[in-house]
Image (cartoon, rainbow, N blue to C red; front, top):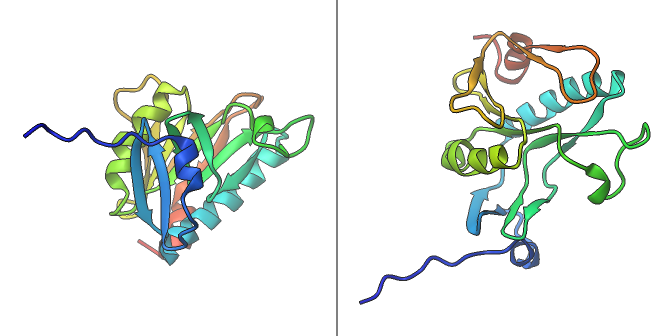
Length: 187
């Protein structure tokens, strides 16, 4: 009996799926990724990190933060919805269209047990190939894995993260202990 070939999905096919509030649908290199809707703790982390990052990049006039659900098509077989992403401002304002978003400054995923393989393996490799800086926020370990496009291993940040995105004239410092304490409570 011949082996069945896995189905290759396109971004357009994923976008055409009926709305399903219980799941998030993405595809990476044609592989369909289905994950359950985020839980409260996950969304709390997204909210706190969004406020933190947005205040930094907007004050510096560098960019703006967006949150999922927001489709990002990297190629015809790759559609992702990062939990958060940062893009440059367009003439001093928020991008108004997908085309105006340009190349992302940063993609971020909040790790969940159901998405760990997707986030650490499938998406990470694709983001690196697309030349996108990528952070994986691990709430259980109270750390952020920072992946740059050419990295074979991430840099691990538990206390602070220094970040200088394209267009920034200085390095931003993000203190991680206050972030994790606000989301999770004291260690």
